[in-house]
Length: 425
Ligand code: SF4
Image (cartoon, rainbow, N blue to C red; front, top):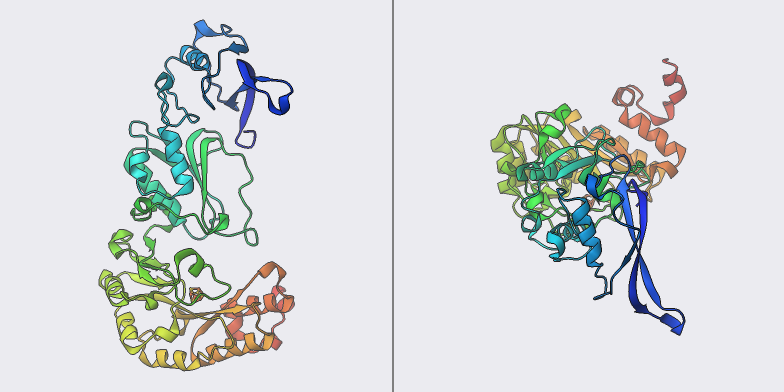
């Protein structure tokens, strides 16, 4: 409770008059009822009830986990106008309180049932706070969808403000501890829901939220760009990659473009392997018809870039293509050459290739892929697996390759001296 920002106000002793006698020793006839309030937000009882009730209650226990009715009566009396929610007794009608909210939050936490919308408290508008734990240069798609969904319900949605109190706070985190820090402040809310790859692979948005048009207004700094997935999953299952575990080892169409695009000039497509999707033709056709410029952000599978698929890609107004050459044991040269012969994307800066390092490859194998790609007319981009523990040489290589001004000036890695460039030579 402390971590959630609550302070204990009172400990009320409930004398149950009868109770268990484990180990045949004393009889446990008392229980504590604890009264907490969110720091700085104490709800005061109606004036005529202040000091009216003592900190000892007496009532015979009726059934397991049921709280004494005199406690409910006391709360009803002390807070006559306040709206009350009973999180403890699901479905309880005691004092007009309802277990609906508890069902709802349990649902969100387990994300197993489909009746999300049906379980929301219909007559209560919620105050929703959002925390983008590690977002910097990229908007958080899940939060944008949650925002849109809640706004459509009439809820109030805003970025979390530590000086306010919320019914529900969503925290979304993309990266794990290796690359980002978790949120360290306390969260003032009745319920907090954490999601995103940074908190595990088994949390997914409920369908009804997943297919909501994102609230792009949440990130005005990225206005004019649409973000989303047309397909999910990847059949390859590379050892370092979370996609197969999270989305499945099969690429499937999951949405039409209109679900997340509404005329924006640019589309950032987040699909892991759209060329492996049986519906690639229809989906690429939608991208082409939009006339928006498209950034294929996550890597097209060059092995699947057949003449038919490249012809479909050629109809798309392309802002950026991303491929990947992750495994040095794979000879992808023939595939990259074939793509070059077929593509209409003539600017090599738009033909970027991720090169994975520090995942079982030698330094020589890394350099081989980098030089080969550059010589073929692609723009290599070094990714470092587990970067904080990677060899210094690999990190130095990444700085060289990914700084494009340096990379195209200093042709050979052995001539790259970071010290001299830092001094501005
Ligand atoms: S091909 Fe790409 S998306 Fe698919 S498993 Fe490998 S790294 Fe992940």
